Image 1: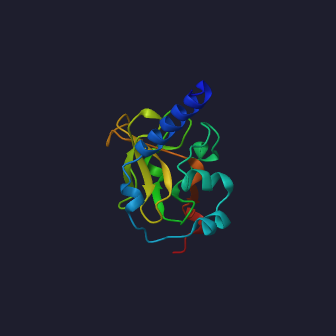
Image 2 (image 1 turned 45 degrees about the vertical axis):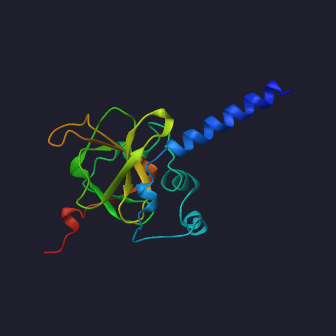
Length: 168
């Protein structure tokens, strides 16, 4: 006779496997990147939070990133490889709790289909190292109508040179 708990556990396991298999279209996984490191190497250079987001497709808690409040001119770069991703000129306040941009820099990011949490979204990753950055949605402001909703922990901010610091 089949034990009821065993049957429930088996069903839950199958549901979990199905959800994991449905998560992504695997195009980003099959893609090769200019910067490639082993899991051990990534763990050595990233904080645990950065590793969770960039390498495990995690999400930071809404409102937790200091980059939400970054207002200076400069460039947001990948925390994993330093690839320039977004200009501060394209950053805007989306009210979501994550740094948001209406447009990435040319050739800075790639996308793939993310089917986690039983919904379909467009995942955004660094074009240079493949690190997970966040997602893009079609509810952003003009001129693109897109909202690149990024995990702040996946990026670093590099301020532009100050006018006083520039040489003539």
